[in-house]
Length: 252
Image (tube, rainbow, N blue to C red; front, side, top):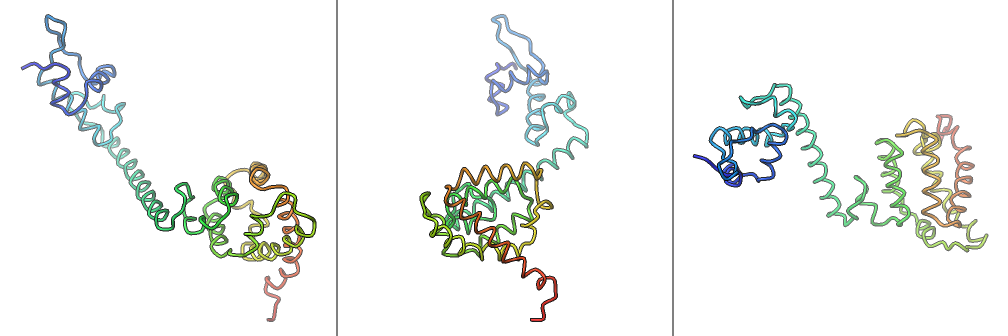
């Protein structure tokens, strides 16, 4: 019995292009041709093709399939490596499904970083974008802390910051900075690494500073940046007197 390329593909449940690809890689031997120039495949070609397809189904790379010919076997270490890759992919898919479930549950944007699904809908567009930048700058522990900050941060001052126009006057800026400072101070006390984040960086300190500053300049208007700077100075001034008590010297 002899089959054409198309017939062989149909029997094996694959495509003509796939068979041609296997020929090009030297995995499937080229058959004899009929007098009219058409290829004619026999049972030996079918068996070889089915063995290749089975290995591909298991996830064996085509580069390793060649060593399986003609017996259709590969070394155990190849299968172990494939199994480890499959396990990692299963874990990734499971994590993706969990993230999708959280996004749908909380009505968050699809691109929300993992863990921020419940808080992102109430953040400003600038803050949401900054979180994306943070995921490339800080380690997992830092991101968990940032998530906790976002979860507990429901201050009205955030809405005022978001609405602050670029031409806000001096009094408005100073007033807003004074409202924002206690929020920043509380975070500095609760998460001391914010004052010295070197131990939580995913990249170099110089790159982190440069990227953060460029992100802030891009995402916030000049008035908002001015308020953030003022509030940060005030917050550090508020935190300094409190630190001796935090170190255990308080009797209260």
